Structures are given as C-alpha cells and as structure tokens.
Amino acid sequence: QVQVMESGGGLVQAGGSLRLSCTFSGYNFYMYTSWYRQAPGKEREFVSGIDDTHVSTYDDSVKGRFTISRDSARNTVYLQMNSLKPEDTAMYYCKSRGCFSLAMCADDWGQGTQVTVTS
Image (spheres, rainbow, N blue to C red):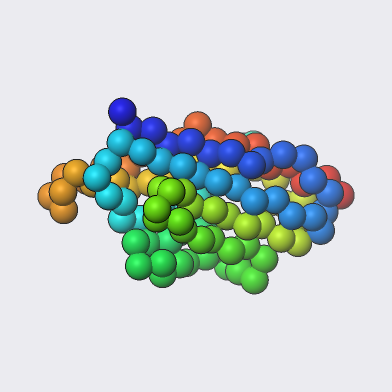
C-alpha cells in the first residue's frame, strides 16, 4: 500500500523552529522527495526538494533558514525549519516519487501538516 505521511507541524512563535517529517512506503525505492506549502487563498508552492543522492534545492524564500535531509534507511525526509516567520504559515505537503522500477514511477502526495507562526 502506497503511503505518504507528514508530521511535525504545529504552532510556534516567530523566530522559533519546527521539524517536519515525511515518511513514505509502498515502493521499491524512492528518487525524489519535496516539500510544498499552501497558504489560505494562495497557490501551492515549492519549498524544498532532495534526490536519492542527497542533492537538495530550496526556494529563495527559505534558503538559509530551512534544511532538508533524507534518511533512506527509514524512507523519511525531514524539513528543519528555523527562524520561522509569520509568512511561513501554511499547510505543508510532502510529495514523494516512488518507483517499482526505473520505468515505473509515480508521484504521491501526503495529506499535509499545518504550520502556524505567530508574530
């Protein structure tokens, strides 16, 4: 059964930190996992991503504050969020590309975890 599950969201004051986790299962291996966020009334936007060689990318708005990492043995990707700002408030979603073989891959989304940053 394919599953993508986020956790770690919550309520935090500006300047605080949270660590989000994304755990996925159901495929033979995973190639790329990314975090997106969606604030009320706005479109979903890319935050950060990491591939199976641990190469990571970030949106400019979070560079220097967020760090993505991957524990391949646990099929888990983390998003460490420091120096949080009220504008980081959003529902955070994990998207994982899983594969049964190199020719059989699919993207799956989790249900999201809410991050609220108060000023």
